[in-house]
Amino acid sequence: MHEFSIVQALLDSCEQHARSVGASGISRVCIRIGALSGVEPALLATAFDTFKLEGRCADASLEMEIEPLRLECNECGYQGEADGHRVLCPKCQSPFTRVTGGEDMLLLQLELTGTDKGAAAHGADS
Ligand SMILES: [Zn+2]
Image (cartoon, rainbow, N blue to C red; front, side):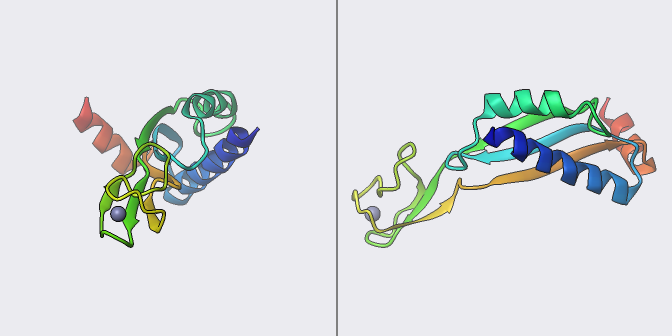
């Protein structure tokens, strides 16, 4: 399944990042999912819970933010959110648009545990 390989890649990069800063664990993973990225958030969450059990992400919670599709219109100059998943300009209905956002999945933030820095930040939080 599509989402499974995405989650594996996501966990891999989280793991790598944690290792590079010497963190023993990851408590929170924040990602942004573009409306056009083709990722199903519910499936992604399930896949995350299934795969995180091996490694530093075992206790991590996943937070998802959905990024709407954004367009720039070559005809009328409209810039902003699209109408659902349609790539037509919502203002003048022109098909000559450029997608400027909402296509990708981005790793936004990692909350690490087991580092001096992470522990301090966590303590201030709670
Ligand atoms: Zn337009």
